[in-house]
Length: 443
Image 1: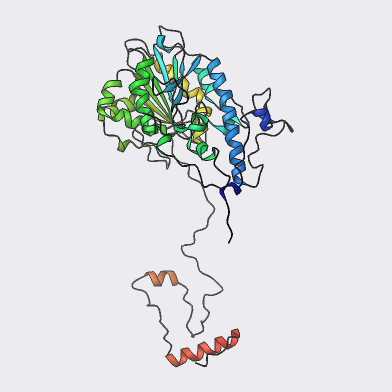
Image 2 (image 1 turned 90 degrees about the vertical axis):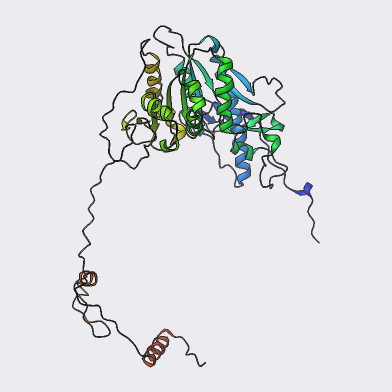
């Protein structure tokens, strides 16, 4: 009898979390290129075995993330561990980034990234491809925000909080949290195990889900790091908009935060307004102090819809706020990259509202409608085959010239029904079988 021991299974492939050891470097354009051929970007399909490809990408993404974290720290951001009060890095925790001088800021921008991305990452297709590390990460956004003013009377840049919506699964062996895709690619007992299973030991207190993480950011992180009277700007990316809007829609939470939140930029989110129940949050805040930026082929900044939605487009616009094109036609993860100038300029516009005045979205006259394409398709409604018209069928019936009209007209001639007797049917079937070479059934 064949017996295979656990020790006989193929070992899980291992790659160094180091760019140079993986065979890559960062060139003068801030792009990741292959050492053996500087014209090549990151090569994912280097092996026919999917597990080897995933393990290489796991190491690559972590190596790039450490580069991003180092650059964010050079910009003045500090890594903090959640839940608050966690100092032992061997215990379950979720990292976030907070401006080192955030306690002095009168304006704070809180960014909730996508629920599928690593902390600090916007789009790996940009980080590991054309565009480079800064452009494809939060570094470009943080750098742009640090050039803004906090208010008309305060020229200092706003404070920044980078929430960690994607990496919420604790990986004990690595002493860090991972995203769901990274956790599946983390080391396993062998290369042929099914996957890593999320268990109770992989949960982080108060941050085990994206919904809980949003609540922890609002209820504990922001009050802990910021002044009580500091104003809050919020940027949500992709699916994180669902959890942020759900939280603010709660009457108790909205009453707590409505006087502090300046504005809300929904980038790539698609949360339907009919799922929100708080009338003040929907009809006052979303309508007047929120904007959505969606994937669209239209130029960046084009108005797609007003707060009521746009019935002249198949694009989803029922979000309760004005909807704009981000300039990105395909990928949600790159919408903030493509539309960063327009989106961040709007945040600055809101922040520079004269003191004593309350910002309100202007009225937008929406002309946008889906384009109607002229087609050269002929009208087939009265089509008839000239070769068949007037010919007789095998039963001696004339092919009707107006088949469509008469069969659809209750007053037209009724279609003929030809009935074959049983004997006639059997004889006809036998003849057809003989023609096709089928043997006659003697039974």
